[in-house]
Image 1: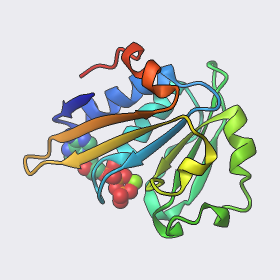
Image 2: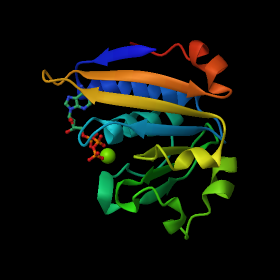
Image 3: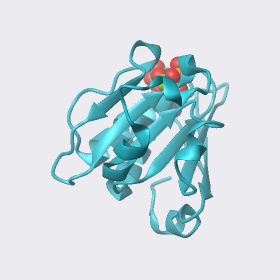
Length: 154
Ligand SMILES: Nc1ncnc2c1ncn2[C@@H]1O[C@H](COP(=O)(O)OP(=O)(O)OP(=O)(O)O)[C@@H](O)[C@H]1O
Ligand SMILES: [Mg+2]
């Protein structure tokens, strides 16, 4: 599935729709170069899930747990950029256990976070020269049957 989002707000709105569809145990990997909009999308996801806490931008925070709101699903937001694919460095967070009770969103997690689950959604963002973000959903495992039901805005 492909989408085009011309503004940060439209990218966030897409994140909100995705966030509303997330359940505990869901793994979402955000792929795409620096500034592609991964954190912006995560802000939308957090809003859609109704979790607490501010979604922080990259590299300053490697991982943050956002407590569940009314939807009852917490959000664990990981930025693996500085981890070089080694998620085991997040030793204060037991990601396997955390994933059971939270939705886990990992920026730069491709190539590492897949070991956490056979079921995951890759959201690939590309930045076009005119600042439009081209977004592709790559579902794996059970996500293959879930994505058509997401009714995501595009
Ligand atoms: N259509 C758009 N969608 C999303 N962000 C956009 C768009 N147009 C411009 N932007 C801007 O691009 C920037 C995206 O930054 P963001 O931190 O979300 O990227 P990132 O992929 O998380 O980067 P990093 O790899 O450094 O973590 C923001 O400043 C945002 O306002
Ligand atoms: Mg980021």
